[in-house]
Figure 1 (cartoon, helix red, strand yellow):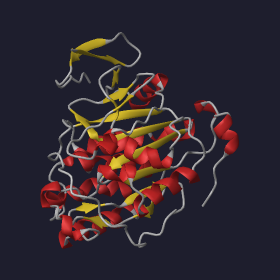
Figure 2: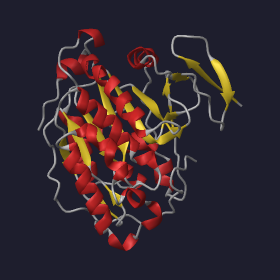
Figure 3: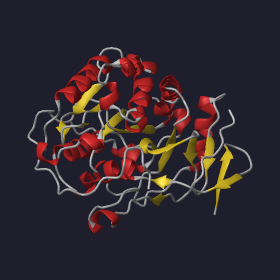
Amino acid sequence: MKTQVRPCGSTAIAFSSGQHCKEYEGEVRDEALRESPVPGNQRQVAMPAAFIGHGNPMNAIEVNRYTAAWKAFGGAVPRPRAVLVVSAHWYINATAVTAMTRPRTIHDFYGFPQKLFDVQYPAPGLPELADEICELVHPAWVGADLDSWGIDHGAWSVLVHAFPDASIPVVQLSINADKPLGYHLDLGAKLASLRERGVLVIASGNVVHNLREMDWQLGDCGYDWAKRFDEDAKALMLSNPADAVRLDGHSYYGVAVPTPDHFVPLLYFAGLAGAAAGQPDILVDGYTYGSMSMTSYTLGLHRACAPNDPVDAPAAEPEFPADAANI
């Protein structure tokens, strides 16, 4: 099977599916914007942005203080022209952006209840946004994915709570696994002007994400090393977000970030915050199963949920795929 990918604004090229593609170089909802979005180049007020610690895929169908915070976030932003998601679960060796009109809902996991596989998030795409992104990040190369990806659970597990009617266009930007951390920070900064064009940028991952060290008995607790890394990350994010790129030198980076896929989305958000000279706020925070941080940040929006409310009981124990696996 051939997957159609093209450099934005050019003729499609093909590569085989499953292969890596080559890289060439409180309530403030604005109902008026909801009914008639302002064209991107005329928008005056910057949209908020967010980094969401999405955690267990079961959060998509559960109600707890994390999903309540995501819902509150969705209710507190003006209606976006589109949502651009940088998800930990589209981790390939190229920088690409979805450019299809009807992206499919991807269930990129296994071992979970059928109810989770039944979730569909039928949001439209916005192909023209792919060309806008290419222009903004030039000379970095970004491919337009015409049929390979869609909306993965790093995106839809959050969006089903934030925007449950699935009427807002959704576009995803891949994480290029071949690039150093600084590349992702810089790319996030280059995307900052999308906020003035009515695009809500959401980075979705986890600051601490070590599936091999999970303990189902720990519920809403965190290991000491997880707390120390997450707290030091907070100190940087709330003072000088661009310094988050230095966290790879932290003494607990190796155990907190055994693979970079879930950490890198934080750098896109940090780049946005640095470009805006803005200070992020904590949307919600906490820990699950010892080795996962649920900390979420917003930019340009006051905190919507107190971080220390009690967490609901943990879900049943499904089998998680291996770190960095996109199945």
